[in-house]
Amino acid sequence: MQAALRQKIEPQLVKAAVPALSVRGLRVTYGTEATGGRTVLDGVTFEVRDGEFLCVVGGSGTGKTTLLRALAGLVRPSGGELSFAGQAITGPSRDRAIIFQDYSKALLPWRTVRGNIALSLEARRVPPDVREATIDELVAKMGLTHAQHQFPAQLSGGMQQRVQIARCLAQEPEILLMDEPFGALDAMTRQVLQDEILQLAADKKMTVVFITHDLEEAIYLGDSVVVLGRTPATVIETVEVGLPRPRNQLTTREDARFLAHRHRLFQLLAHNQVGPLGFAARHPATEA
Amino acid sequence: MRRGATGLIIPVLILLLWELFGRLGDLPVDAVSRPSDIAVAWFNSLIDGSLLLATWQTFETALLGLAIAATVGVLTGVALGLMPLLEQVTGPTIEALRPIPAIAFMPLALMMFGFGVALEASIVAYACVWPILIVTIGAVRAIEPRLLEVAATLEMPLADRLWKIVMPAAFARINVGLRIAAAIALVVAVTVEIVLNPRGLGYHLILAEQSLHVGLMYAQLFWLCVIGYLLNLVLRNIGGPSRAWGMAQ
Image 1 (cartoon, each protein chain N blue to C red):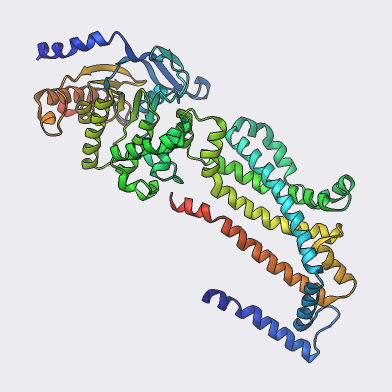
Image 2: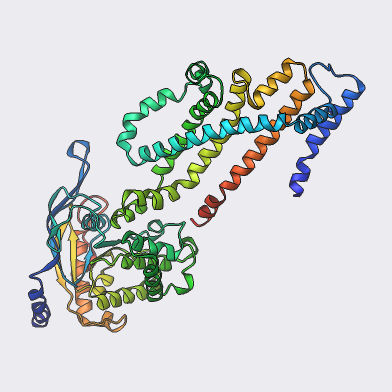
């Protein structure tokens, strides 16, 4: 088991020499000490390799979303260093697309599906004739052809999230930052979209940082899983998944390594869960 | 259509009774005219063109004032809505200026502009700018922050952000402010004409009263009622696209 894991890790260590995204000692504090400020993240350190699919898990309220917003440049860190492709992150950039969890709020309600996708192309100053062809392509790729002239409110949650993904792809980013993108969807839709995003990431050799509270989703999608815990949150473990690709909703999830990772992550999170009384809950399942 | 028809019952009934009492000779004729006399006076003023000219004069100034107020109000409102710090600085000044009745500026405006369009339009603009400003600030504040984050992530230039995100997102609410302001514009324009400015419907109204053309005075009163109604109808239809957006939300 150990040997098998090491085999999986070693070739990736070579690539790790050029991290796409580097997070060193990240600290984020909301407000100031005087006004009862709250430090959400402290000393968060990890790297994302070029082309890696990295998942971040943690209990609710640990600061997963804050971390992703800091990576997107939407939240200013109070300390630490963030860099992408060797450049310090100082604000939002088209290179780093963020896919929000609340898709219904992130789409322009007055624009159709095509209009929403067009927004990214307009921002990139793509000429109108090229724009139409690109939209056609994206609409087909994301399975939105029959809905392309509809408004977001006329679509189901899953379809709306597809529109948001299409719009992010249209901005031709170098990294996708996804904030629990499938959290609000039903199980079937979620599985379909999981496989589609894996396919997209593989096709475009896209670097992805994927936030989720769903441990199985993290293991299923990720090359590695970063576990956030404690208050303020920090990285308590990084798990290299090492499961073969392409992944399969049935066989991958039944793989012994998948279950072992799930067990490990569950224990980690259960030990670091902050209970309603403010102290770590002792979960019966982890006592054994 | 049927609703419109039933809504006519009361006005028609009132006019009939009014005419009847007039014919029976129970009305003090120097203050109240008969509907038939009013209709004749209205028709005559329509034929000689004086009514239409006065209507145009009132509309011209009301719309000019409204346009100035809309431009200033929306631009300032968007800026203040997007920059809370600026709003903190200007807020107290706005709150101090806002309660001054626009009509109170008549003497000042007369000194500055003399009689005419500028006098009236400036007072209309002052009265109309506040509701537009306040509604616009609120509308911009209420824009979904996600949309502004999307714009930021796409590195959209300020002009694109305003035109493609802020204005469409805030339009429905700003439009409500414009409708409120349009009603105010008509009221203020007519008031300025009655009190001071020798042009427009308000001036003709007071002129008819002073020359004891009671029928004509009533005709103009009814005419104002019709105009106000039509104005509101037009503005409601301008709200059409915003209703379509609202439906898509």
